[in-house]
Image 1: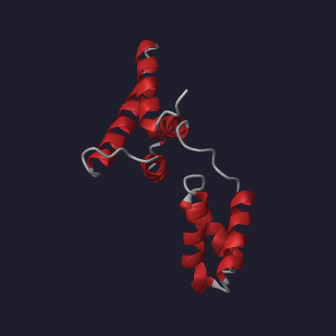
Image 2: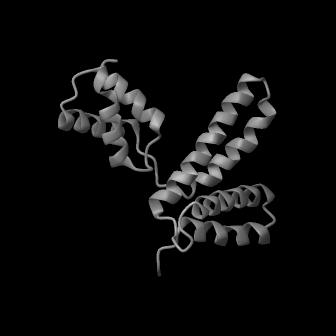
Length: 153
């Protein structure tokens, strides 16, 4: 069996969602498909998105949903939060399993040691090194928070 791309998995799951009449999931899958196609059109005509690029597209999508949840909460619109959470849940099915804070912290410590970082001024370098290592498996805000703690910023 060949490994399916995220786009291929989304398309297959769309068929299932249509057959089971799962409108919420189908709506999210259509949006994911559109986001993936949009990213693909920015590339050369015959090039496919790589796995890392597909993951980046989905991570941006999840980030937008989280920002919407924060905004709805801030505006006192709690009834708008559950649909956004459902979209995040559906999208996360296609993302690699996230690392725990402890696992991220291990990467942070390793990056600090490797880069010789000594304080807050070195945060950017450490964050860049960690993000390169954890590609798609850790949220940037979590990495930033843990690097800040580790460097005493």
